Image (tube, rainbow, N blue to C red; front, side, top):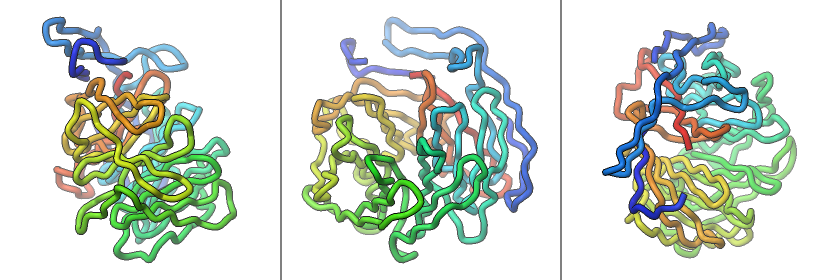
Length: 334
């Protein structure tokens, strides 16, 4: 893992063939890293060859396999050391124990289903962006499908990512200028929030992608993958204000977002890069404080957090997407 800083005063594999049709998978084992971190004082670049133990102590795996042909994109982690990942192939959900790297299919998926962005709520409900106008909720303990929400018509939309803020799960639509708020829980009416203000929807490309709440919980931050911009979106009106970037021209290929306090992590998928920004108090300016890269990155799409790590899935968009293609999740220290 390589971490670089824009200036000296910056602020702070193996995969096994698996069937996705419904049978439970055998658990996977993964080797743990070993060795010590090294630093190059001349360049200011830090390279870490290990990550210390998580909340449970010891050394946890820094990489774990997913089923061949799984086509992952989203990852979610809650208060316990389990990662949930969704499949673009058939909407399946895979759960990995971060302490061991072992995992298995939680929800088998089905024909016509897709799972991209995911978020896990404190009540155990897993919210899943389903691409074709659909959002789903699952029981994270059993994988049971709890509810399906048809947010839009199936075609001409791409329900891409989700975050939890207030009493709703907010979903992005990469092909339309709107966000959709699904009530957290099991009942309620979906709210459509048209994007206005500085937002200009571009045709035939992915626009809104990753989404997180602002540090004060009063608005949403949305990354626009093309041309690579961040926006602060008013929850009441949908007015989108372009966030001023300092130290970076853009966040092109911006995909998943993750925020810890006023630190915003932007996953730039095809660049194999995480850009790290410090937000001002109103989340109207984002200052680049560093970047994170890793030789194990292979088009990472989204990130989740546990302990002192970010966990990401490699979507491998630039590789053949076949039933034999191998996929992994990786961890980097923060």
